[in-house]
Image (tube, rainbow, N blue to C red):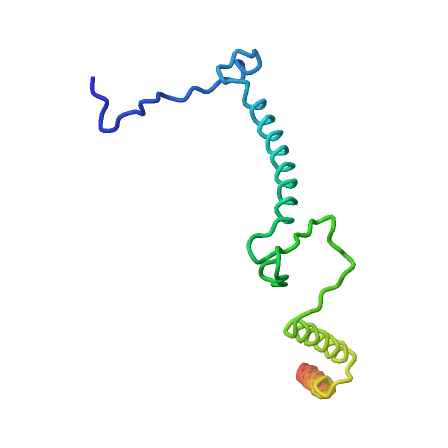
Length: 161
């Protein structure tokens, strides 16, 4: 019988164990994976210890003229790696010029806005004067409307009599 356009893999299909099989312990999955992983970790630890010992011996032996001439090349020196627990948290780093200027700019803006709220800046004084003038004009307009309304009501009252 034809399989269609695509063939299946020659390795066969995956077989997944069901939750019931996992609980019963009859899963076809090998249980040695965790053991193999643990053995690999132990071997890595051993190799790390051996490499540390060998690196100390290698640093004593210098090839060619390196033993005769003492060179202090910063590019040759390996950078010392800092671990998180060894890092000094109290040590403050100096800010770059752009960062300092940005912080100063923010502080100046905050100071200006604070003075603006208190009404001490020139712009705030002009705004307050303009606001007072507008309030005065609105009050006069309201008073005028009241007078006109009162006059209109009075005319109506006279017309009724």
